[in-house]
Image (cartoon, rainbow, N blue to C red; front, side):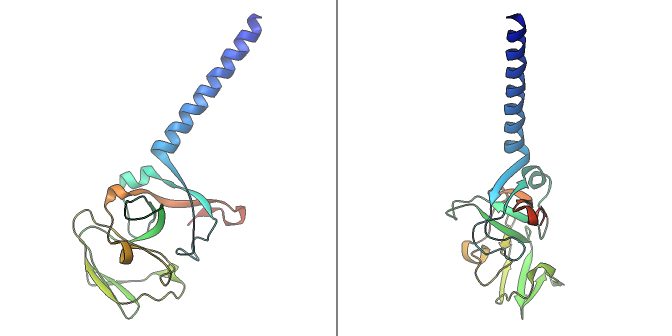
Length: 167
């Protein structure tokens, strides 16, 4: 009986430790998300499952990071690419991106066309866009997002298995 009690106590300790570790991981380190739609094609595809990192968002949000956004402006979580950082001036002209007067190449676009626009971002404003510009509802549709609406950055696909990796 004593041996059974020790075995049950050990099992309970393992279960409690697993619950605590899972809680910490999914509340402070990782954010699980599913890709819905084709707005990030062909970087991300509809049905991709992955996680993004809460901790990297808290350290620094970088230009061209893929991020998960949770905002009252959107009906669901959205996954987009950070294009503009606070106080940036963004100009799209003739399908070219200029940030603060400097042309930046967007290698991930794979021929996507972006209509011309211009915007000056304020403090704590981020401008995000999908890679499949023709179908993406992004900052051109919703407006800019605040840092606290960006819940995680750096997307890692874990399913389907043939697409595993950072995107």
